[in-house]
Image (cartoon, rainbow, N blue to C red; front, side, top):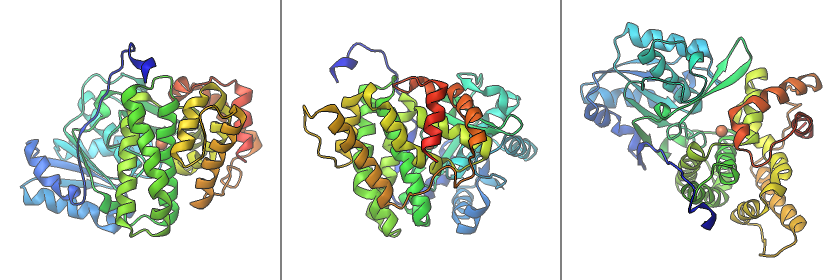
Length: 388
Ligand SMILES: [Fe+2]
Protein backbone atom coordinates (compact mmCIF):
# COMPACT_ATOMS: atom_id res chain seq x y z
CA UNK A 1 0.00 0.00 0.00
CA UNK A 2 2.93 2.31 0.72
CA UNK A 3 3.54 3.08 -2.93
CA UNK A 4 0.14 4.75 -3.19
CA UNK A 5 0.57 7.32 -0.45
CA UNK A 6 1.64 10.21 -2.67
CA UNK A 7 -0.56 9.55 -5.67
CA UNK A 8 -3.73 11.56 -6.35
CA UNK A 9 -6.72 9.30 -6.90
CA UNK A 10 -10.45 10.02 -6.92
CA UNK A 11 -13.18 7.50 -6.14
CA UNK A 12 -16.72 7.75 -7.51
CA UNK A 13 -19.61 5.56 -6.34
CA UNK A 14 -23.40 5.82 -6.38
CA UNK A 15 -25.69 5.60 -3.40
CA UNK A 16 -26.64 1.94 -3.17
CA UNK A 17 -28.86 -0.31 -1.12
CA UNK A 18 -27.66 -3.91 -0.88
CA UNK A 19 -29.72 -6.87 0.31
CA UNK A 20 -32.81 -8.97 -0.10
CA UNK A 21 -35.84 -6.77 -0.83
CA UNK A 22 -33.79 -3.84 -2.22
CA UNK A 23 -35.49 -4.05 -5.65
CA UNK A 24 -38.90 -3.37 -4.15
CA UNK A 25 -37.69 -0.03 -2.74
CA UNK A 26 -37.85 1.35 -6.30
CA UNK A 27 -41.11 3.21 -5.64
CA UNK A 28 -39.86 4.74 -2.42
CA UNK A 29 -36.62 5.93 -4.01
CA UNK A 30 -38.45 7.26 -7.07
CA UNK A 31 -40.74 9.26 -4.80
CA UNK A 32 -37.71 10.59 -2.89
CA UNK A 33 -36.29 11.78 -6.20
CA UNK A 34 -39.62 13.51 -7.00
CA UNK A 35 -40.07 11.32 -10.06
CA UNK A 36 -43.45 11.60 -11.81
CA UNK A 37 -43.03 9.25 -14.78
CA UNK A 38 -40.22 6.77 -15.33
CA UNK A 39 -39.03 4.99 -18.45
CA UNK A 40 -38.43 1.41 -17.28
CA UNK A 41 -35.67 -0.06 -19.47
CA UNK A 42 -35.40 -3.84 -19.55
CA UNK A 43 -35.03 -6.86 -21.85
CA UNK A 44 -37.78 -9.10 -23.29
CA UNK A 45 -36.68 -12.26 -21.42
CA UNK A 46 -36.65 -10.30 -18.14
CA UNK A 47 -40.25 -9.27 -18.65
CA UNK A 48 -41.11 -12.96 -18.80
CA UNK A 49 -39.39 -13.47 -15.41
CA UNK A 50 -41.64 -10.83 -13.88
CA UNK A 51 -39.15 -8.45 -12.27
CA UNK A 52 -39.94 -5.37 -14.37
CA UNK A 53 -43.63 -5.88 -13.52
CA UNK A 54 -42.85 -5.96 -9.80
CA UNK A 55 -40.81 -2.76 -10.12
CA UNK A 56 -43.65 -1.08 -12.05
CA UNK A 57 -46.05 -2.10 -9.23
CA UNK A 58 -43.66 -0.68 -6.63
CA UNK A 59 -43.58 2.63 -8.56
CA UNK A 60 -47.38 2.63 -8.87
CA UNK A 61 -47.80 2.21 -5.12
CA UNK A 62 -45.95 5.52 -4.66
CA UNK A 63 -47.97 7.28 -7.37
CA UNK A 64 -45.18 7.12 -9.97
CA UNK A 65 -46.30 6.46 -13.55
CA UNK A 66 -44.12 4.42 -15.91
CA UNK A 67 -43.75 3.21 -19.46
CA UNK A 68 -41.74 0.08 -20.28
CA UNK A 69 -39.07 -0.04 -23.02
CA UNK A 70 -37.91 -3.62 -23.55
CA UNK A 71 -36.32 -3.26 -26.99
CA UNK A 72 -32.80 -4.01 -25.73
CA UNK A 73 -30.72 -6.92 -27.05
CA UNK A 74 -27.41 -8.25 -25.70
CA UNK A 75 -24.53 -5.94 -26.78
CA UNK A 76 -27.00 -3.00 -26.93
CA UNK A 77 -26.97 -1.20 -30.24
CA UNK A 78 -26.84 2.54 -30.97
CA UNK A 79 -30.26 2.46 -32.69
CA UNK A 80 -31.85 0.80 -29.64
CA UNK A 81 -30.60 3.68 -27.50
CA UNK A 82 -32.07 6.22 -29.95
CA UNK A 83 -35.42 4.34 -30.04
CA UNK A 84 -35.52 4.34 -26.23
CA UNK A 85 -34.75 8.06 -26.15
CA UNK A 86 -37.54 8.75 -28.62
CA UNK A 87 -40.03 6.88 -26.41
CA UNK A 88 -38.76 8.74 -23.32
CA UNK A 89 -39.34 12.12 -24.98
CA UNK A 90 -42.67 11.14 -26.60
CA UNK A 91 -44.04 9.90 -23.27
CA UNK A 92 -42.78 12.95 -21.33
CA UNK A 93 -40.79 10.83 -18.88
CA UNK A 94 -38.65 12.57 -16.27
CA UNK A 95 -36.45 9.68 -15.13
CA UNK A 96 -35.17 6.18 -15.93
CA UNK A 97 -35.35 2.92 -14.01
CA UNK A 98 -33.21 0.11 -15.46
CA UNK A 99 -34.01 -3.50 -14.58
CA UNK A 100 -31.67 -6.12 -15.98
CA UNK A 101 -28.09 -7.16 -16.68
CA UNK A 102 -25.40 -5.05 -18.31
CA UNK A 103 -27.23 -4.57 -21.60
CA UNK A 104 -30.44 -2.89 -20.34
CA UNK A 105 -28.46 -0.87 -17.77
CA UNK A 106 -25.94 0.40 -20.34
CA UNK A 107 -28.75 1.18 -22.78
CA UNK A 108 -30.62 3.05 -20.03
CA UNK A 109 -27.58 5.14 -19.11
CA UNK A 110 -27.09 6.10 -22.76
CA UNK A 111 -30.81 6.92 -23.25
CA UNK A 112 -30.57 9.34 -20.32
CA UNK A 113 -27.76 11.47 -21.71
CA UNK A 114 -29.15 11.39 -25.27
CA UNK A 115 -32.36 12.94 -23.89
CA UNK A 116 -30.71 15.69 -21.83
CA UNK A 117 -28.01 16.61 -24.35
CA UNK A 118 -30.08 16.21 -27.56
CA UNK A 119 -27.17 14.44 -29.23
CA UNK A 120 -26.65 11.08 -30.94
CA UNK A 121 -25.31 8.43 -28.57
CA UNK A 122 -22.14 7.89 -30.62
CA UNK A 123 -21.11 11.52 -30.03
CA UNK A 124 -20.36 10.70 -26.37
CA UNK A 125 -17.62 8.18 -27.18
CA UNK A 126 -14.54 8.41 -24.98
CA UNK A 127 -13.73 9.84 -21.57
CA UNK A 128 -15.63 12.85 -20.14
CA UNK A 129 -17.47 13.75 -23.34
CA UNK A 130 -20.93 14.15 -21.79
CA UNK A 131 -21.78 17.79 -21.15
CA UNK A 132 -25.07 17.52 -19.19
CA UNK A 133 -25.96 14.76 -16.74
CA UNK A 134 -28.89 12.50 -17.58
CA UNK A 135 -32.23 12.52 -15.71
CA UNK A 136 -32.57 10.82 -12.30
CA UNK A 137 -31.71 7.14 -12.69
CA UNK A 138 -32.27 4.03 -10.58
CA UNK A 139 -30.51 0.79 -11.56
CA UNK A 140 -31.69 -2.64 -10.43
CA UNK A 141 -29.28 -5.39 -11.54
CA UNK A 142 -30.53 -8.93 -12.24
CA UNK A 143 -27.10 -10.53 -12.78
CA UNK A 144 -24.04 -10.68 -10.53
CA UNK A 145 -21.17 -9.57 -12.73
CA UNK A 146 -21.58 -6.49 -14.87
CA UNK A 147 -21.84 -3.88 -12.05
CA UNK A 148 -23.14 -1.35 -14.58
CA UNK A 149 -25.28 -0.16 -11.64
CA UNK A 150 -22.08 1.04 -9.95
CA UNK A 151 -19.75 2.00 -12.77
CA UNK A 152 -18.84 5.10 -14.76
CA UNK A 153 -18.84 2.94 -17.90
CA UNK A 154 -21.41 2.49 -20.63
CA UNK A 155 -20.64 0.22 -23.57
CA UNK A 156 -22.69 0.56 -26.77
CA UNK A 157 -22.42 -1.29 -30.06
CA UNK A 158 -21.79 1.11 -32.97
CA UNK A 159 -23.46 -1.09 -35.56
CA UNK A 160 -22.08 0.43 -38.76
CA UNK A 161 -18.49 0.58 -37.51
CA UNK A 162 -18.82 -2.88 -35.95
CA UNK A 163 -17.08 -1.72 -32.77
CA UNK A 164 -18.23 -1.28 -29.21
CA UNK A 165 -17.73 2.26 -28.00
CA UNK A 166 -17.09 3.15 -24.37
CA UNK A 167 -18.71 6.19 -22.79
CA UNK A 168 -16.77 6.85 -19.59
CA UNK A 169 -18.13 9.68 -17.48
CA UNK A 170 -19.29 10.46 -13.96
CA UNK A 171 -22.70 11.07 -15.55
CA UNK A 172 -22.91 7.31 -16.20
CA UNK A 173 -23.12 6.58 -12.45
CA UNK A 174 -26.80 6.18 -11.50
CA UNK A 175 -28.33 8.14 -8.62
CA UNK A 176 -29.26 4.95 -6.82
CA UNK A 177 -28.45 1.25 -7.27
CA UNK A 178 -30.88 -1.18 -5.66
CA UNK A 179 -28.80 -4.37 -5.45
CA UNK A 180 -30.95 -7.36 -4.59
CA UNK A 181 -29.31 -10.82 -4.70
CA UNK A 182 -32.75 -12.48 -4.88
CA UNK A 183 -33.08 -11.27 -8.50
CA UNK A 184 -30.11 -13.40 -9.59
CA UNK A 185 -31.66 -16.74 -8.57
CA UNK A 186 -33.21 -17.26 -12.01
CA UNK A 187 -29.82 -17.29 -13.78
CA UNK A 188 -28.91 -20.78 -15.05
CA UNK A 189 -25.54 -22.39 -14.37
CA UNK A 190 -23.96 -21.10 -17.60
CA UNK A 191 -25.02 -17.48 -17.15
CA UNK A 192 -23.98 -17.64 -13.49
CA UNK A 193 -20.54 -18.86 -14.55
CA UNK A 194 -20.04 -16.30 -17.34
CA UNK A 195 -21.27 -13.31 -15.33
CA UNK A 196 -19.29 -14.51 -12.29
CA UNK A 197 -16.08 -14.70 -14.33
CA UNK A 198 -16.90 -11.24 -15.74
CA UNK A 199 -16.91 -9.97 -12.12
CA UNK A 200 -13.63 -11.82 -11.51
CA UNK A 201 -12.15 -10.17 -14.61
CA UNK A 202 -13.26 -6.73 -13.36
CA UNK A 203 -11.52 -7.34 -10.03
CA UNK A 204 -8.35 -8.76 -11.61
CA UNK A 205 -7.98 -6.02 -14.23
CA UNK A 206 -8.64 -3.29 -11.65
CA UNK A 207 -6.10 -4.80 -9.24
CA UNK A 208 -3.28 -4.88 -11.80
CA UNK A 209 -4.34 -1.65 -13.56
CA UNK A 210 -1.92 1.27 -13.96
CA UNK A 211 -4.63 3.44 -12.37
CA UNK A 212 -5.22 1.29 -9.27
CA UNK A 213 -5.29 2.84 -5.80
CA UNK A 214 -5.40 1.74 -2.18
CA UNK A 215 -9.21 1.96 -2.20
CA UNK A 216 -9.68 0.05 -5.47
CA UNK A 217 -7.18 -2.64 -4.37
CA UNK A 218 -9.15 -3.24 -1.20
CA UNK A 219 -12.36 -3.78 -3.14
CA UNK A 220 -10.74 -5.80 -5.92
CA UNK A 221 -8.95 -8.35 -3.74
CA UNK A 222 -12.00 -8.91 -1.53
CA UNK A 223 -14.10 -9.47 -4.66
CA UNK A 224 -11.68 -12.21 -5.75
CA UNK A 225 -11.84 -13.88 -2.30
CA UNK A 226 -15.64 -13.83 -2.40
CA UNK A 227 -15.72 -15.28 -5.91
CA UNK A 228 -13.38 -18.07 -4.84
CA UNK A 229 -15.74 -18.85 -1.97
CA UNK A 230 -19.10 -18.52 -3.74
CA UNK A 231 -19.01 -18.87 -7.54
CA UNK A 232 -18.84 -22.67 -7.76
CA UNK A 233 -21.57 -23.00 -5.12
CA UNK A 234 -23.86 -20.64 -7.07
CA UNK A 235 -23.22 -22.59 -10.29
CA UNK A 236 -23.90 -25.95 -8.65
CA UNK A 237 -26.97 -24.83 -6.71
CA UNK A 238 -28.72 -21.80 -8.23
CA UNK A 239 -31.03 -21.53 -5.21
CA UNK A 240 -28.16 -21.23 -2.67
CA UNK A 241 -28.97 -17.74 -1.39
CA UNK A 242 -25.77 -17.40 0.62
CA UNK A 243 -23.73 -18.05 -2.54
CA UNK A 244 -25.96 -15.67 -4.57
CA UNK A 245 -25.46 -12.92 -1.98
CA UNK A 246 -21.72 -13.59 -1.91
CA UNK A 247 -21.53 -13.27 -5.70
CA UNK A 248 -23.66 -10.11 -5.74
CA UNK A 249 -21.39 -8.57 -3.12
CA UNK A 250 -18.34 -9.67 -5.13
CA UNK A 251 -19.77 -8.05 -8.24
CA UNK A 252 -20.41 -4.82 -6.31
CA UNK A 253 -16.88 -4.75 -4.86
CA UNK A 254 -15.41 -5.49 -8.29
CA UNK A 255 -17.58 -2.69 -9.75
CA UNK A 256 -16.33 -0.18 -7.19
CA UNK A 257 -12.79 -1.24 -8.09
CA UNK A 258 -12.96 -1.20 -11.88
CA UNK A 259 -15.17 1.88 -12.17
CA UNK A 260 -12.31 3.82 -10.60
CA UNK A 261 -9.18 1.90 -11.64
CA UNK A 262 -10.44 1.07 -15.19
CA UNK A 263 -9.79 -2.30 -16.84
CA UNK A 264 -7.23 -3.96 -19.12
CA UNK A 265 -6.49 -6.16 -22.11
CA UNK A 266 -9.18 -8.78 -21.43
CA UNK A 267 -11.92 -6.16 -21.70
CA UNK A 268 -10.28 -4.38 -24.64
CA UNK A 269 -10.17 -7.71 -26.51
CA UNK A 270 -13.68 -8.74 -25.43
CA UNK A 271 -15.14 -5.38 -26.55
CA UNK A 272 -13.52 -5.89 -29.94
CA UNK A 273 -15.08 -9.39 -30.22
CA UNK A 274 -18.48 -8.05 -29.14
CA UNK A 275 -18.37 -5.30 -31.75
CA UNK A 276 -17.09 -7.24 -34.76
CA UNK A 277 -18.70 -10.64 -34.16
CA UNK A 278 -21.48 -9.78 -31.66
CA UNK A 279 -20.19 -12.38 -29.17
CA UNK A 280 -21.39 -12.44 -25.52
CA UNK A 281 -19.28 -10.26 -23.21
CA UNK A 282 -19.01 -12.58 -20.20
CA UNK A 283 -18.15 -15.59 -22.33
CA UNK A 284 -15.40 -13.72 -24.22
CA UNK A 285 -13.85 -12.50 -20.95
CA UNK A 286 -14.00 -15.96 -19.46
CA UNK A 287 -12.21 -17.48 -22.45
CA UNK A 288 -9.51 -14.79 -22.60
CA UNK A 289 -8.81 -14.25 -18.88
CA UNK A 290 -6.09 -16.83 -18.16
CA UNK A 291 -4.31 -16.15 -21.48
CA UNK A 292 -3.99 -12.47 -20.53
CA UNK A 293 -2.92 -13.36 -16.95
CA UNK A 294 -0.13 -15.46 -18.48
CA UNK A 295 0.89 -12.59 -20.79
CA UNK A 296 0.75 -9.85 -18.12
CA UNK A 297 2.22 -11.76 -15.16
CA UNK A 298 5.83 -10.59 -15.53
CA UNK A 299 4.78 -6.90 -15.45
CA UNK A 300 3.29 -7.09 -11.92
CA UNK A 301 4.20 -10.51 -10.47
CA UNK A 302 3.49 -9.59 -6.82
CA UNK A 303 0.02 -8.37 -7.65
CA UNK A 304 -0.82 -11.46 -9.70
CA UNK A 305 0.53 -13.62 -6.85
CA UNK A 306 -1.88 -11.82 -4.46
CA UNK A 307 -4.71 -12.66 -6.85
CA UNK A 308 -3.56 -16.29 -7.08
CA UNK A 309 -3.57 -16.51 -3.27
CA UNK A 310 -7.06 -14.97 -3.12
CA UNK A 311 -8.15 -17.79 -5.44
CA UNK A 312 -6.68 -20.37 -3.07
CA UNK A 313 -3.20 -20.93 -4.56
CA UNK A 314 -0.40 -21.76 -2.13
CA UNK A 315 2.15 -19.08 -3.03
CA UNK A 316 4.75 -18.35 -0.35
CA UNK A 317 6.72 -15.10 -0.16
CA UNK A 318 10.02 -15.55 -1.94
CA UNK A 319 8.75 -18.37 -4.15
CA UNK A 320 10.60 -18.33 -7.52
CA UNK A 321 8.63 -16.25 -10.04
CA UNK A 322 8.04 -19.04 -12.54
CA UNK A 323 6.54 -21.22 -9.78
CA UNK A 324 4.32 -18.36 -8.56
CA UNK A 325 3.20 -17.80 -12.14
CA UNK A 326 2.29 -21.47 -12.62
CA UNK A 327 0.44 -21.60 -9.29
CA UNK A 328 -1.49 -18.41 -10.17
CA UNK A 329 -2.40 -19.71 -13.63
CA UNK A 330 -3.46 -23.04 -12.14
CA UNK A 331 -5.81 -21.22 -9.75
CA UNK A 332 -7.47 -19.33 -12.62
CA UNK A 333 -7.72 -22.39 -14.86
CA UNK A 334 -9.07 -24.62 -12.08
CA UNK A 335 -11.85 -22.16 -11.33
CA UNK A 336 -12.78 -21.90 -15.02
CA UNK A 337 -12.77 -25.69 -15.34
CA UNK A 338 -14.80 -26.18 -12.16
CA UNK A 339 -17.58 -23.81 -13.28
CA UNK A 340 -17.72 -25.47 -16.70
CA UNK A 341 -16.05 -22.90 -18.96
CA UNK A 342 -14.30 -25.00 -21.58
CA UNK A 343 -15.19 -23.19 -24.82
CA UNK A 344 -12.85 -21.33 -27.15
CA UNK A 345 -13.20 -18.37 -29.49
CA UNK A 346 -13.17 -20.46 -32.70
CA UNK A 347 -16.18 -22.43 -31.48
CA UNK A 348 -17.93 -19.10 -31.04
CA UNK A 349 -17.29 -18.15 -34.65
CA UNK A 350 -13.94 -16.30 -34.64
CA UNK A 351 -11.85 -17.20 -37.68
CA UNK A 352 -8.18 -16.64 -38.54
CA UNK A 353 -9.27 -13.87 -40.96
CA UNK A 354 -10.81 -11.86 -38.12
CA UNK A 355 -7.73 -11.78 -35.89
CA UNK A 356 -5.94 -8.80 -37.50
CA UNK A 357 -8.91 -6.44 -37.32
CA UNK A 358 -9.87 -7.68 -33.84
CA UNK A 359 -6.37 -6.91 -32.58
CA UNK A 360 -6.37 -3.48 -34.24
CA UNK A 361 -9.69 -2.56 -32.58
CA UNK A 362 -8.59 -3.96 -29.21
CA UNK A 363 -5.48 -1.78 -29.25
CA UNK A 364 -7.66 1.30 -29.80
CA UNK A 365 -10.00 0.43 -26.90
CA UNK A 366 -9.70 2.76 -23.89
CA UNK A 367 -9.29 -0.23 -21.53
CA UNK A 368 -5.97 -1.16 -23.13
CA UNK A 369 -4.34 2.02 -21.72
CA UNK A 370 -4.48 0.78 -18.13
CA UNK A 371 -3.24 -2.76 -18.87
CA UNK A 372 0.01 -3.19 -16.91
CA UNK A 373 1.90 -4.15 -20.07
CA UNK A 374 1.36 -2.56 -23.50
CA UNK A 375 1.17 -5.35 -26.09
CA UNK A 376 2.16 -5.07 -29.75
CA UNK A 377 -0.39 -5.86 -32.44
CA UNK A 378 1.38 -9.18 -33.01
CA UNK A 379 1.08 -10.04 -29.32
CA UNK A 380 -2.66 -9.25 -29.26
CA UNK A 381 -3.14 -11.40 -32.37
CA UNK A 382 -1.20 -14.15 -30.60
CA UNK A 383 -3.51 -13.93 -27.58
CA UNK A 384 -6.62 -14.26 -29.79
CA UNK A 385 -5.04 -17.25 -31.54
CA UNK A 386 -4.14 -18.92 -28.24
CA UNK A 387 -7.76 -18.62 -27.13
CA UNK A 388 -8.93 -20.58 -30.17
FE1 LIG B 1 -17.06 -6.77 -18.01
